[in-house]
Structure formats: C-alpha cells, structure tokens
Length: 179
Ligand code: PRP
Ligand code: MN
Ligand code: MG
Image 1: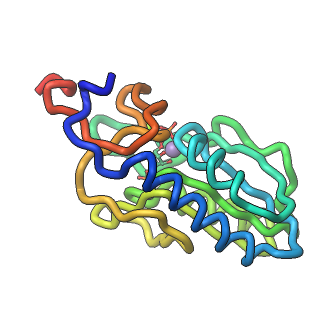
Image 2 (image 1 turned 135 degrees about the vertical axis):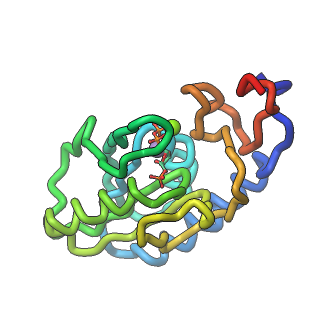
C-alpha cells in the first residue's frame, strides 16, 4: 500500500505531536465542562481517537454519519443523515471532530442541525483544512494543518474506501487513479 503513495505530506510524528498540542488546548477550553465530542464517520475516526486521548477533561463521545448526494462529478450540496446521534444535543457543548474541511458543506449542514437542536455551544476541530475547496461559509475553530489543492489520503481520508488506515497523510501516485 505504501508504494502507491507519491509523497508524504504530514508524517505520523507530526500528526501525533499536533494531537498532543490540540488536546492540551481543548482541555483548557473545556475545563470543568462535559462536552459532547461528535466524530463525523468515517474519516474522523483516527483523528478522534488520537485527539481525545490527549484531553484531560470528562467528555462524552458520539458519532454521526452523513453523506452528500452526488449527481455526476459534482456534489449537489444536499446532505442526508445515514446514522444519527444517540445523544440529545439540547443544552450541550458540542465539539465536532472532522478529518478535513473541503467545500464545507458537510459541516455547514451539521452546524445548522445542531443549532436547530438547541446546542449550548458548537466548536469545530479539524485535522486538515483545504481553504481552496470552500463553497460554504464555514470556518473551523481549531485547525491542525492547512493542505494545498491536492487529493490527499491517509489517517482517515480515503480513495474508494482505501488508505484510511495509513498513519500519515499523503498524495497518491497518479497511476492509482488510472492515470
Ligand atoms: C469527507 C471528509 C469530510 C468531508 C469534507 O467525507 O471526511 O467529512 O468529505 O468535504 P466537504 O467539506 O466538501 O463537505 P466523506 O463524505 O467522503 O465520507 P467519509 O468520511 O466516510 O470518507
Ligand atoms: Mn468524512
Ligand atoms: Mg470519503
């Protein structure tokens, strides 16, 4: 699998150091609170696991799976719920955990949903941010790394459901796409 990677953009060591740093920041932010940490399946899973290990406050974990409707090559922008939360959002401090923000549509949808459900506060933490992809008006409160306008895989991010289990973030060789 590693020989299908053209280059490593963010190494395992850099990711782990970042999780430690952000975990410490978030521990301060949520000190004496009991946030509801929501991982967006499936991509957020590795980051969520490593980040939350570094938080020293009590927290509750839940998961949400959403998918964008795709008409042809472009996402239509519509999002539907595949798996909803088990937990009530009303009155809770919500921490949404994502692997990447690209167009921003997934998060725009989730933020609206949690506002509608009367969250007390909503914060977004994302490992990666690709600002060049943005179409929705959304910004993360905490960003691990900015990435350039390239298709990245690894550490949760997939190409045709593969590469999520890489411990680093990298770029695929063009021939893997059939190029
Ligand atoms: C990817 C990624 C983010 C979202 C970002 O998830 O994990 O959740 O797309 O894109 P956006 O900012 O343009 O909405 P995807 O829908 O591919 O599902 P997955 O996490 O299961 O791979
Ligand atoms: Mn995702
Ligand atoms: Mg995906």
